[in-house]
Image (cartoon, rainbow, N blue to C red; front, side):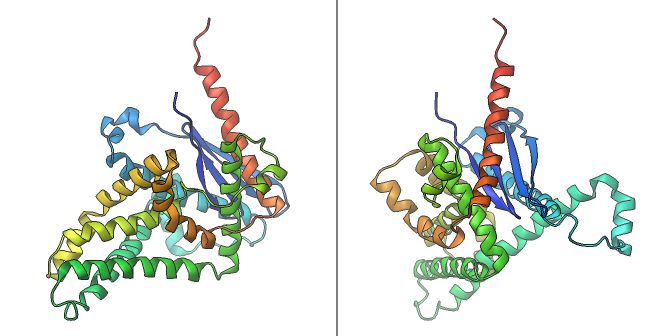
Length: 316
């Protein structure tokens, strides 16, 4: 039997941990208590056999993680600010949307947020470097492959610069500390140590299956792909960058999660090295309270999945 791997993400004043059956989110409330939210996951591999295929499974996992990420961030923000902000009268647009959509409003807003996030990300990290890279075409003598390399370097530079600027925010720094707590807790569990605050604190805040590393692998693979998908027409370059993005994300998933996440040798360490370096920006050293929150979330997942396994066993 292959080992089971757990992942997660930092949220507002908390951590979400995800297993194969469900996810649990622990959030520190303003009164100091820890709120827990859990939700069973739909097994898409049972609904669609295509999702099991390499590359395609990566695209599905990427979309699913974005939707879950936005949803948990929204929920955590509501819990973390509960009782702090005074209730305000809903505006005309909000009242109209609530009348039309009712209980579906939150789901629609989450889906809209995901679409907006994707559009901004594609524009900032895919199309902007493509356009700026095309300005170097006269200097490269029309060498489209060299222009593709310049474009790739710009893409990585913009991404690293964006992450670095975000890290200057006090609120983002705090979330990055929860990100570190998530990694430390998973590293502690995967090493076989008991999930105590003392044990977790001893472990590294870096992890090779990190989503930040995945995004950087996307950037690097796109550089290789676009060295060979060449055209001098800027609109065709835009089109290829958008159309091939799902394929690149799928390839990055196979490299950074399925391969690098399950092996440990010199080649794997070389491939994940840039991502591990970037994690020194996107993770911070957590305090004892943040570690407690991360442990609470992972323990809930372990508890529920253990119970699920018992319930699924046939009577003897």
